[in-house]
Image: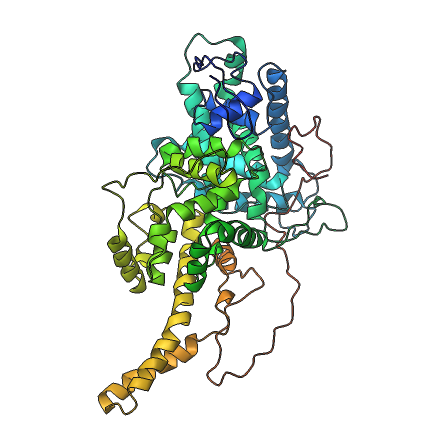
Length: 527
């Protein structure tokens, strides 16, 4: 009997597909989608991902020709963006002109150094990523992608999207048998690992780049910046998460959505990391290939990723319904190890409840963190220990989740603003005639509460916090955390400022104008 997924695609009825066997119909697009939904993708899994993401055609088409085009395209990018400024006659190394090859060279080196800071901390427990050649390869791929996509640039977290792709490409090569067909031998050539990782990363970022974009880029009069065909909103990821809450979470589980709102916890506190890293921190690393295959089955734009967001929240509902806002926030920032199989099955049910029954919750493991552990963690965070230590669990490694240490600080500040002023006011009402020994501490508490009081707790802007973590002292974003003075006088609204995009580091294109000899296979470059 054939097995079908939600789209009606089927797996072969004999179900005798083996690894490194590109025979049809198992490797047709429809069967690959069904296998991805059922977590039955065969090796080379990276090839299956490339086909699902529309980067490569199925094996019955000219897959080697398409792959050759991708690899030539990457060689073209490297040759154009790796120009030696010493070959430019008459260019001053101290020039600050935008057209200066030396100026561009120094900016490129600064960008590579920034990327390297993240790359060297990628998956510290994975021996493969401790290899210097692998780290250099990741820097190269991320640098050339950032320079070729000036309207996005490089952001923290991209290295954690590239790493699982690169690891899967590496495993497909190391696990391959010796008696390969000529087609597979060409696909799995070791010398093209960097080329293929760029192809895979570009295909995945086609759906993720909207979550990394924070502002519009206006090209200069000389046309050095590419004209973006898509108008990006600086808070696009925040708007997307608000839409997920209103159009998905509230209709599917209004009780949970209402409770999160009462706890003053917005979706961007945790959702930005979930989306930007493709849930890389929320699931065991061994289960990421299953989850990513499930997401890639819908195509490169990942149109159903919001169902996985909602499925994760519903799967954690028993923990999130706690009355203590601190416990809820701690659970969202450091969620228990969820099951990718259960999350995918629940997401399928939420998408098509009539076709897919609701899965049974997975059994509770002995090593799963209970509510008391969340309470103790939150108590440590309130003492400032957890945010200062940066060690221990998976939250202590690099990337957006660590850039979110500042987001956690802002979240704690938001909770203090919401709870301390009313608690201080209640304490003052009960202690109408305090003794001198109690009066002094009470006055200090009241002053702190007045300082923290804020008219709109939504002013805690996590996106701004993440950008501040990435850019250091540079303040990025339109919203600020503004405390309200004690007399509660209405504050005038600050005048809207035109956001300035720093073009020095990320948003520069080639030092000389020439067309690439081959077209972009993924059609990702903006003309």
